[in-house]
Length: 357
Ligand SMILES: Nc1ncnc2c1ncn2[C@@H]1O[C@H](COP(=O)(O)OP(=O)(O)O)[C@@H](O)[C@H]1O
Ligand SMILES: [Mg+2]
Image 1 (tube, rainbow, N blue to C red):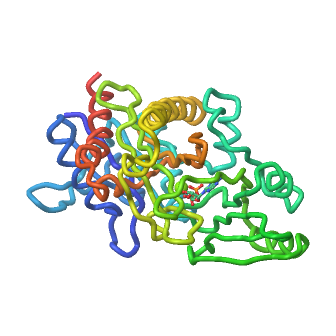
Image 2 (spheres, rainbow, N blue to C red; image 1 turned 180 degrees about the vertical axis):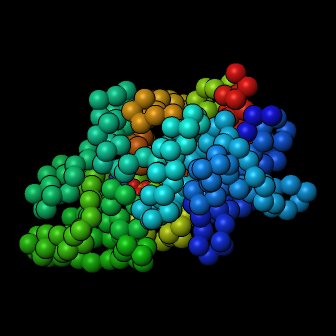
């Protein structure tokens, strides 16, 4: 039977690579149904000299440790951004490839390089204007053109470090999240002070400045859409699930890990008239497929992406962010059982297709 290795980070706390045990258990179960041996491992479980891996497999209702030869296919499911474990998985992936193992999924290099690669593609029409942060001179033109701007870490997650800048009286209002995702609010009456503050905020890290989107509101709170696009069992990109995320009151970010809440897409779009709703749904699908193809072309073989899509007051769609290791909790939370099941099954069905051909 062909085999699929799920490469995950070694969790120091757990002492094993089962960083997403619920998901990985389901991967093993789906694997059994589609004729694929699925096991989970971290770089530490690889015995390079003997060409074997001490993997973890869900069997008989529990996790069991068992030795495996190098698998046919390895799926990169490491989500420990910017850590030593992340570096180890990068090294392990390269070495596995040298051993003839086929790899699936790449960790995207950050918001700035992804934006740069998408600019010249068919996905460009959904990109908010974005520049690399380089002091007030990089912020001011975007603020002037769009009335608001967002500053966010090129490599980041959960909305941490994201600031929304808006003109406020003669000054500037800044709302957002600290690096530890605490709520942040401040008003500056002088640009000079705001500029000095932003230099401190961004010190030592790469940040992008983005055209601020006047995001659709839901119950007076900012909302956006998480679209889950995957390769299906036929090997074609498909928009598998989409749901709304609504930030806490007064929050500039909608991320679930920042206290956001899921809402069905239909509920989010309900205030719009039916023709507009249908147009947005169709355009969302077009955006998802176009972006997935463009990202794959630029960065290598993928099996899924989570796209953060903003809808503005005029009904325009904007690609806010591309996530290469998207969480999938949203769909169960909004009661989309078919979507929640599909986002788990597709990667394994697609992997099986690759192995059986
Ligand atoms: N250009 C923007 N305009 C308005 N809001 C934005 C913009 N970019 C991001 N946001 C808000 O901040 C959230 C987090 O930004 P995102 O780019 O997805 O970074 P992260 O990696 O932290 O999730 C988004 O889900 C959205 O609610
Ligand atoms: Mg995001």
